Amino acid sequence: MAGLSPKQTLILLAVALLIMIGIIHFRNNNPVIEAKPTTPAITLPGQFAVTFPDQGESAIGTENFGVIASSPNQTPVPIASVTKIMTAYLVLKEHPLQPGEEGPTLTMTAKDVADYESGVANDYSVVKVVEGEKLTEKQLLEGLMLPSGDNIATTLGRWVAGSEDAFVAKMNETAQVLGMTQTHYADLSGVSPATVSNAADQVKIAQAAMQDPIFREVVAMPQAMLPVAGLVYNVNSMLGSHGIVGIKTGSTLAAGGCFVSATPVIVGTETHYIIAAVLGQKTVQSLQSALDANAKMLDEVRSEFKLYPLSPPPNGFGQTVNPWNSNSALVAAKPVEIWGFPGMTATLSIHLLKTQYPIPGGENMANLKVQAGQSVQEFPLQNSEPINPPGVLWRIFRNWI
Image (tube, rainbow, N blue to C red; front, side, top):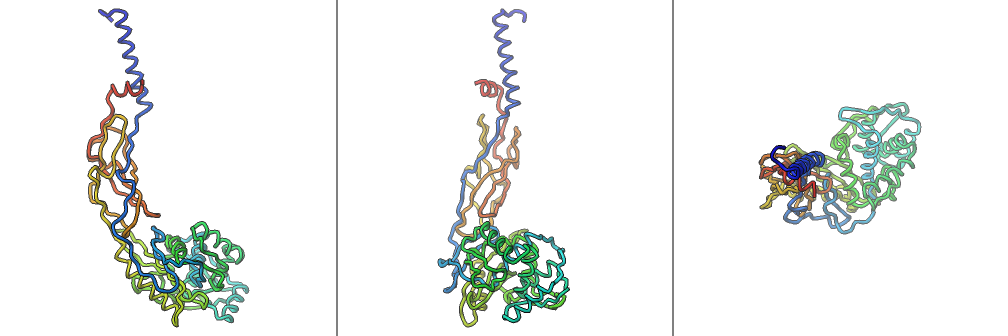
């Protein structure tokens, strides 16, 4: 280099080398943009309010929030045919159906007929079958859940697990997985008073079952036609009243009147379900008492489930963070409203969609995630300020030091 001393030339070459090393190192170790929510959790205003029946036990929740509230006396009690919610859930879990499908066909055996005849003799709730009759999985589920066929529960259990005992074992294993700690199944139909649960646990199994579209379809059917039994009717007399679209009734001397219900709440393009459970109603008309108490609970809480606006924090719902301090508040382009209920607590997190800079201001660069129970709602966030790449000097010194 003309005009430079050897020492000056050496210094210039060293600086050039440092710049090249810094740029190369930067390309291989690209600094990351991160983001964090301004507030990690929120609680919706107000307090969830529901009046539980004076006797028995009750609980209420939704298909995505789980149990929201329950009466104080949550102890295991007989649940009668409400048991069949778990039976149907397990059948569909082991042999899932898509809308429009009938599923495998089962041929009724002498054992199936003997179960039917035994049920008649014991004055159980049964669905007539004859040897050689062919019933699809869908038809068997209709016979299980609409007229509440105890014998159909036994037939389905043998088909799914090979024996009644093996199916009952699956029921109890599944109850534990679902967190139903106060539940023990002794049979498939609820005839046994040793099959016990509490109202909160029944909201949990109903929550799981209502995820399945075929389960929702079957429990909402007012009637069905079966090959031998003919036209069978849904014993849920509340179906279609108070917005109720299922799920299962139950009644024995030991259990009293029991009813687990579901009613939809439509929010935009989404349908959610309020789930209510009432157990242990022992009156002159115990089942009707359970139906009435359940419907009253639904009517009381329905208006509490809706969209709630979230007030945007002054410095945005979140902040981007990067080492060279080209940061920005993350703001919502339109009002944020979340599906919930009074007093609901939700956690907030931010998922970045764009991390390659430069990012002009006003880009949809992140999603705000609001999670409560199994419900996750997402809303787009924009950067209020441009996010520029780091300068050359920052790159050199950051990667050299």
